Amino acid sequence: MRTMPLEMTLENQTAVITGGSSGIGAATAKRFAAAGADVALLARREERLNELAEELTLEYETETLTVPTDVRDATAVEAAIEATVERFGGIDVAVANAGLARGSDIESMSTESYRAMMDTNVDGAFFFTRAALTHLRDSKGTIVFVGSFAGEYPRPFNPVYAASKWWIRGFAKSVAAQVGDTGVGVSIINPSEVRTEFDVEGKQFTDRFEQGEVTEPEEVAEAITFAAAQEYSTIQELDIYRRDKYTGW
Image 1 (cartoon, helix red, strand yellow):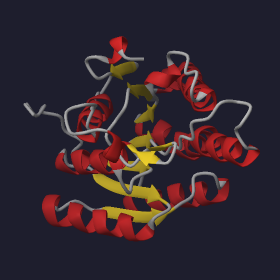
Image 2 (tube, helix red, strand yellow):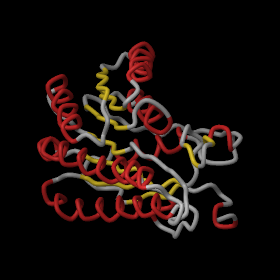
Image 3 (cartoon, one colour):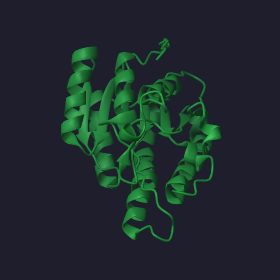
Image 4 (cartoon, one colour):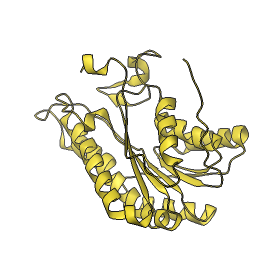
């Protein structure tokens, strides 16, 4: 794969990332650390968080904080944000990345599956934004939402997931309208399929796709870093699609 690293700096900044234990979240943590940021990692898998934090410290000599957090729990999210602020003194970048997909037609989808997806993708993003926003106002920082191709086009095989990502886009743009005059940046990154542990119908994308077939998490992380590194302007929305996406959906 051809790469040309962009010169982007997050020196002396603190970033907090949900879904930080793997995939896009882990790749973003590495990219942020390489750009000079201290990183707080939020996810449910404590062991994975600790392994990643150790890797970041050894490779980039960055400061890290791991906070095992279920984003569906408002109290836990608030506690994680407060722990981040207590450790680092503030928050400059917040990445709302945690997400869940369970593809199904409406008639056969269980209430449990519906609740799990909406609680994670919608409520989790709201709780995280609500908890982080005051601190982002203080720093005139940036919040980045990880959206999806599914949040821009109809998805007949997983309409609830698609609806949750349409909600993310509407929420993010409305948050931007609310806080833009206070100096807070709000960005949305919309990838198509990304080769991660993302599970649809019992098969992870790492198993479903070979390298080069779809977007890699590092490519999305690069876009998130580009959005986060803007000092005065906002990268409102970036689409990252595999090159043949419009011929195969």
